[in-house]
Image (cartoon, rainbow, N blue to C red; front, side, top):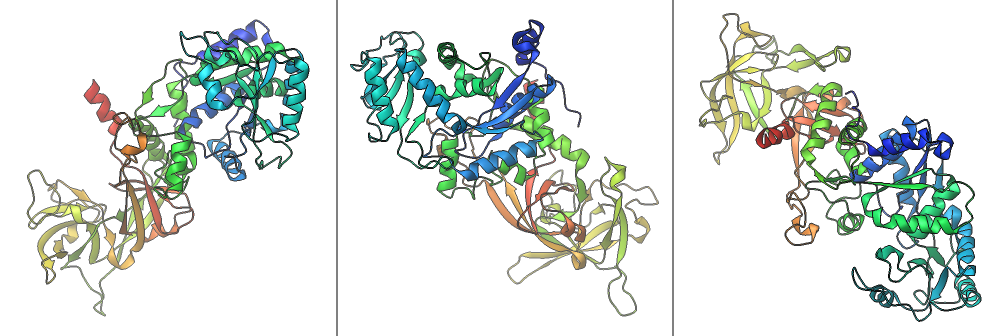
Length: 560
């Protein structure tokens, strides 16, 4: 798949203008700053592609900076998963950094603002502070502690840092404007007290910076030129700029640019809600193939190249929108069509007995072998030999004892083609004592080896099959949407209300012997059924990646 050029990318336009004007001396440096409080999801793929891809296009660099400012929710496991996901997508950070690397400098700058009368210690609780901020069209109320002297504030801040006060007893706030039309500038909190063990700094600190206080300053310390964020940080940009303008920075002031985040139908990307699914056992972990996490999509068989291509294709805009999940699946399907080898597998096996199949001198059924193309899209993938004998497995859905209208597959008296092998005609059925169908009996035409009749007669259906004597057992996980509603929570306000209780079904199938050689994580096409990924940890388990039907094309036709 050739990765497309973004149709709309105002971010690169901004950087080009900056370079033309000599801003930052033509230097381009970005960063990707996730909080290590969960696994990255499909929405992060867009940010990663923008942050790393933009820097790469301009000959610049992009750091990974872990925003580890909340010790209560962050873990080394999440850091490791973030590193693995970025590498899987094909990007390589210039440096791997942490916001905690700058705790000392951030605190020194906090003292600097306090000393200049631009920050103060507030003894009020979170609820009171929030209530006093007012609202749009409603003025805020000054904290009674806003008039403390710089000397008093500095003493209290140092005592906060020394661990003298309990969690929640005090916070440090910037002193800006409690009547500002932008709520983010109404004396925002800079530090809060947390007597919690930090996975990286241990117990060295008991006060931790907020995201707004750590974000821009960390950018400045690193020398970031263009700080690219998602659109929800748009209203925070004036605060970002205000902090930076008050400080003696080591270099140029970074520029924050916001773009619309990536959201999909039938998908939830809230880390809090995803964490709840994991904690409640609704899914098997962060890498459950039903999850929208990058590790989940990787386990399910999504190619990184398809995800990158999709993110590039949709470009960057300043308008939030929700993409159809079928559009992403179309990219996945197109990529796998060119790369995935083909195999035959039967998910709901029904025995097909060919009564006139020849036997050898010992009475054993003869075994024939057919040469089959591994991937018609790539001749370099070569061919393989597939065994064929007198008893086969076919899909139960490919036979109907009483065929409905327009059913062209196998039924008694009807002839069909077995893919690459012979034409066969069903002659009868075999049932158990309870009347359940256990086998279909048929005859084959020896003159049709390869699947074509020498007399030119045509059949309306070609079916896949697996030789029963040579089959390997497989388990196949079939997935439906994890959320039934296109916009989860739209009706009730809680996305988890729309969970699909039937989002996974595991079936016992039969497959040709070559499938037992699939490498962990390899994606193959089960002919006529879809694309399936070999589980990296459980041999014989395959996850359905996507089906063969292009649902996105059907949606576009209906909309047209």
